[in-house]
Image (cartoon, rainbow, N blue to C red; front, side, top):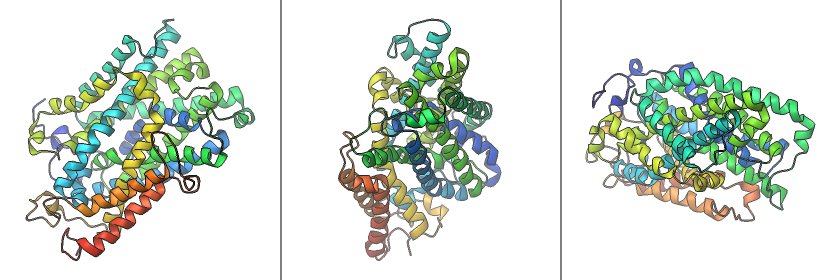
Length: 470
């Protein structure tokens, strides 16, 4: 593969100009398959297992549906619609919010944390899934942190890198095969659980580790699901850039990121309640038996590879905003560099894996305000209009130049939202304020960020004729 491939939708178009309609590779069903493949990775089951820590089956249905729906809808409106409408990658469009250098600052903070941690979690899930298949089918006794499991994790990252060399079209092809099988396997697992335990017995099961206050447990579970919904913010816009229309970019999110992940999350919750473990790699064989359980683990394991691919490709589009020289790196080198931090983290599988639901809270702390400031800017201040030429011209000539390429108002608004979140919920200890059970933390953070950005922009930024808001 050449250093600068130029095929439409290939890795070589990473930092190029907006994609024309004929250069986009995904229609409705193509993008739906990508979304389903992303959604039914083991993180959906693990999210469901985290919900089972706090609530039982009936409450889990409500919090899973509401939390995922709210998060996914807000993310899809905020990232997918503008990227598909204009054919621009997400962090390029964010120049209209933060400024060119502001986006660079944002990426320096976000990319090492979000991309590396998600990829590491998915690779570790892949390793544990293969280890459990080996233990069930071959009679081995591989521990969850054994060198063989770490080797499986590294194998997942290498396989992802090799597939990424073919660009996003390989992601579409792989998902076209895996997504339907994943949907079938997930539904079969749900039927098996309902047949083995029955709805009445499942409804009577108690949460694994609830708080003393039922309302607090309910809201904590809802917050986990909101964090899962908001967590798609970092990658969906860059993928939606490859869709043919804004409508095509929006609705597949409700089928895949909401619908598929909700079903998979509920399967994870029911299995965790029934078998006492929030780790999906430990209950699939007991639920489905050796044959079905091993087959399910294999499909889920390979779905994790497609999720890593989607994240890494989207991250590649974003990281090129850090410095112009990165755009000239050969695509294989750039992809390898993006996978390197996760490669280091998989050598410590226990620490990464066991902090999952706390990681979701940290994601919501960061991403809910970022989603809100983008939403407020695009829909409330700019009336869904971006000026493409100004997204690519120098700061001195661009209406999005702000102050030396930075928009302090957006960062102040995001800080206000993050501060609101921290006042309501500590994402590390899960200590909460008395208002948290009634408000959640993500939704107030979103509302405060949006309001702060609109007020500061209208009272300071626009009167000073910065940012092109006039």
